[in-house]
Image (cartoon, rainbow, N blue to C red; front, side):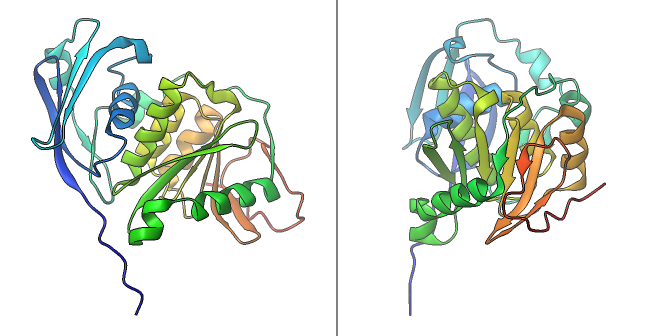
Length: 253
C-alpha cells in the first residue's frame, strides 16, 4: 500500500499595526509570500514597499505586520466580510461589485494550447508537497522564458496569495505572466488574479459561472480542465492558439 503523509494546516492570526484582521488556516511555509499576497489582494497595500516589517511567529501562530502608511481600522472593519469557498477557508473584503471596479486587463500575449498543457504538466510534476501528501493545492506562475515558480498550501486561495506575494516581491510584471492553479476558479480566485493583472488563468478543474462573468468583464482569459490534450476555454479573449486542432469546448455563459 502506498502511504502518503498528511497535509498540515494551522490557525494563524494576521495582525496589522496592532489590529487583528482574522485567523486563517494556513500551511506553514512561504508565509511571508502569503502575507504580501493577501495584503495586496485585499487592498491593504499597493506595492511591496508599503510594508515596513513582518514578524512571523510560527510557535504562537501569528503574523505581525507594520505598514508604512496609516492603517484605517474603522474603514476595514466596517466592510462586510466574505468567506471563501473550499478548503482552508479564508476571508475577503471585496464583493463582486468591488471586483468589477478593478482595472481591465490589457495584454496581447497568446499561448499555444500545447504550451499550456506542457506547463501544467511541469507544474504537477514539481508540486513537491502535493506529491508527498496527495492533499495540497498549488499555484504556479510561468514567466516569458518558460521558467516556473510554485507555491502550495492547504487552501487554493492561500496558494494563489502566496504566488502573488512572490511575484510582487520579485517585481514581476503581470501582463506577460501565466497563472496556473490546481483549484476551482471561483469569483474570489478570479478577483485575486484580476487585482494583480494576470491576463490568463488556467486550471486543471472548472470555473464558476460568477468567475467567468467577471473574467469576461475584466478581459481575462479563463481556461479549465487543462488535462491530456483537452481544455475548456470559458472566455473569448483569443489568447489561446489551438495548435493541436482539438475541441476547445468554448463555454458561453
